[in-house]
Each structure stands twice: as structure tokens, then as C-alpha cells.
Length: 462
Ligand code: SF4
Image (cartoon, rainbow, N blue to C red):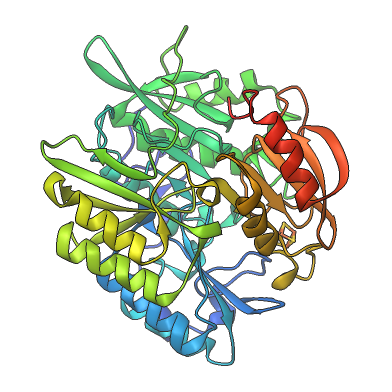
């Protein structure tokens, strides 16, 4: 059945169920009436940590204009500690917010970084490639469809019942793509007989088996139908798709879905592997003589000067915008190839890492005990120390506790804190849940570095 004009499938939910009144501006609405309780930070919900309040700024497709980036830098400097984090969902966070949280929020809303509706902030969780629209391998430019999906997520109160962690991935088939994060629903573009189709799956990633495919024009209707079916089928405690599918046979879910839109059978489809390291350094775009340049702030942390400096480079050499990535890094897109060396130099002067061979560019670490009450070790300081000891760049994740805030995937190597300066060492193993296979217990950073150096001759990062 085709979607109606607003993209909502009539048999799932009558149009009258959706609001027809204009949405009042966020700053005219009492926050208590629009925000639901949640432990997750949002732009309007400042969550307290050891080092002060945290505000999470969700970016559409990771994109932010240079002027907006300046506003984030100003807000972090004026109303918080100045610490800015690039997250593994390609968003930004401001940490260390004190008494002036209202002024900080107002500053961010004024430059258009807020959600369309306050209750919609939690659910605008849509992952795109950071190279959407400019990638040389993509099958289509995902940005228009993404805009439509984000608009629906924010506009329809029904979808505000979704968990703040419920997330969708829209993959255009780009070479630069995060394929390791699991999403409640994923869509992945491919071509068959000259037509672009969207393969899709639930509770996984595009490297998993696809359950079917839809025509590109049905992409929005598919997202709406899956979310509606999830909300109709899941009990309140089943907040994620995997919880529902633990109980409901997949075949039953798909049978319901087929009643709402045409789904094509799909056999032998496999997502092309994404290349490693395309988020760092200089890479050609789909337009001649254009490149994007990726840079990694060490351990995902920026200060206001770094963000302002990157914004200024984007104004001078790019298209006046930056894109943040799920590798906790940023891109300066649309740079003339002949200007790439100047941009690289500018990023390096800002203390951003631009070479994948730099060990620190491959390490990730959560906030740790320096800013989080659950942290058993100062993971960021320990990661900096580890980077000085490793002979080559390895993908290592340091986690202050089992919650694994810094990584939405299982890293090839995980150091899990057990006490200050001491970690258990795990190696990823596809047959094991969690961090993988436990290799050694209670290691100091020096001992972990020695073990990793010895092991680096084997294919840890495969
Ligand atoms: S992983 Fe644990 S220690 Fe690290 S930030 Fe999350 S809750 Fe805190």
C-alpha cells in the first residue's frame, strides 16, 4: 500500500491521530511539560555527571554549519568547562555545565541546533554516512530521505514513545560507512537491474543478512511501518527491537509488514565492505578536484579553540560546514584538491590528528573516573599513556566500566578497568558476547602495551 501524502500508512494510524496545530516554539513551553524522564542527556535535558552537566547536541547526519560550530564553542566556553565531545553517534556533547544551563540551551536553540519539537529530541537517532552525498561509491544521496525520516520522528507524538536509544541507520552504500554499530532498523542501498533498492534488516547492521528490500520511493514508508509495528507489538519493557524479536518470530513481524508495503525477496545480497581509515586524512569526493579531509580529536575531546579553528577552515576552504563521524572525528568537506595540504596543516596546528598511523588516532576511551562516578580508572589519561607505548596504531577501547559508553560496537581490543590504572584485556571474538575473549586480568598500562606490542604482528584489526 502506498504511503499517504505525509508518508504515513493510513491503515496503521489514522491521520487524525497526528497533530494539526502548529508547534509552539520550544522556548515558550515549560520544560516539564515537554521532556520525559530519561538518563540520557539531550539538548533540553542536562544530565549531571561528576564534572558537571552534560548537554547532547544531535546533528542531522553529523552535519553542522561553521556558525553553529562557533556557537557550540561559545556556549561551552561561557557556560561550561569548555570540554566538547564528539560522540560515537556523530553528535556533540558539552560537558561541565554549571548554573547557567538555561543560557546555554538558549544559545544553542538560537542557532537552530534544537529539535523541531521538544519531545522529538530523544528520538532523532538516524545514522548516515559522514560522506552522504559526496562519497564516490554511494548509490544515492541519502540526505533528502533522511530529512523526511527525521521530520516524521520529531513531528509525530506516537514515535516519541520510542526509547531514547532506539536508532535507525540509513546507508547509501558509501565507502565511508560505519557498519559495526547495531541499529534497531537499518536500510542499505544497492543497485539491481539499474534500479536503486533499499535492503533492510532489524536489530543488526548492514553486514548482517537482509530480510528483504523495498524500492527507494518506499524507504520512508518502510521506516514508518516498522516503527508503528514495533510500538504496536512491544510491551513497555521491550524498548529495543532485539527485545521484541527475542519473543516474536521474525516471520510474524515480516508478515505484518508485508500487509503495508511491497517487499521484494532478496537472496545473495551482501553489503560491500567499507574501507578502514577513510575518516582520517585526505580523500577524493564524487566531484572532480574535490576532497574531504578527516581529522580526529584525541579521544573525542575538543576545546573551543579547536572547534572554532576547524569551522574557520571550513569557511575558508570548504563549503562552510563540518561533518562529525561515528569514529568521534570530523570532516572538512568540499575542499579543492589543491588546498588540501593547507587544510591538513591547519588541522594539525589545532592539534587534531590527521594520520591513521598515529596510535592516539585509533584509541577510544570513555569519560572515566575523571568525570564519571562509575569509572574505575582514568581511562582518558591511561589511553594517552598507552599511545606513547604502542609501537604501531591499534584499535583499542578503554572502558571505565562495563557500560561501554565510548563504543557502540565491540572493538578489536578492549581494556576494561578493574581499578585505578589496572585493566582486564579482551580480544574481539565473533562467537562471544560483550567484549569478546578475556585474555589477561588486572594489567597495568605498561603490561597491556607489552602484550599488545607482541600481538600486533597478528591480525588483531581484521
Ligand atoms: S563506560 Fe562506565 S565509566 Fe565510562 S563513562 Fe560510561 S558509565 Fe562512566
